Image (cartoon, rainbow, N blue to C red):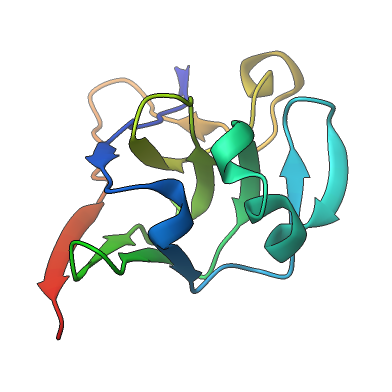
Length: 132
């Protein structure tokens, strides 16, 4: 059976202007227009709402410099696709680990095949650190 997974953890933030993103690849796919873009440049528009898909190293982080905390999503393969999503005016950021991009059940890209009488273990975790 082909399957694809995506988790959607939302994180409360102080304000978009207080965020600093860490551990992201240089390029991403802007899912609003399906164009390949520079991740750093796209993240500058987070307060306007973003939906960015990226092939990560299996780790994505951001800092909220007002709340003085760092959120790290640890999402190794096959959860190594990452989405950063925002929906202003809500003060939140969603760091999503995905196993495959949109439409993958149609095109077969990165599908996970689980044979009968088998199982698949997937791993994703969230680490919250304080800093001064």
